[in-house]
Image (tube, rainbow, N blue to C red):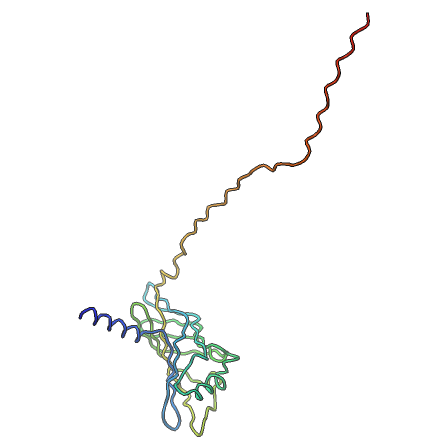
Length: 205
């Protein structure tokens, strides 16, 4: 029974901390929806002083799903222009004591965001808000329903220790190649050996 509970706890923990992105979007005049992706690449690093940092975390725009295919089509292709800007990128982020700052790239435009984060032994979950108008996403409307400018973002990535990242890779057995200097053997006809000289004639008496 204990093993079963432990297994259930492990699965639940994995689901909670799975590597993903969630965009919580408010609608105008009312309502909201969530767009999610489980194709987040990159990781966060925990430094010896407890601070954290991350660079180049990417999410493919085409991987964002909201549960309605037509809405996804408009979001991915019309407003985020996936063909031209295939990824949403967290260029760089730094944090300490649960608060952080980051540079976000959406549609090729950079913007600064601030937020909070929590972490466990293996994952970091960050929460922040972004204004989509700052990334040239404006005038979204479909059948009289618009989108609020402020979007809530939640992203979860693996967390590793700085010592593990900076550790040198296992040294390769890079012994210098031993050159076996076999002298080159010249192939060819050996030089002719001169025949022995005939003996000198005996002196006449």
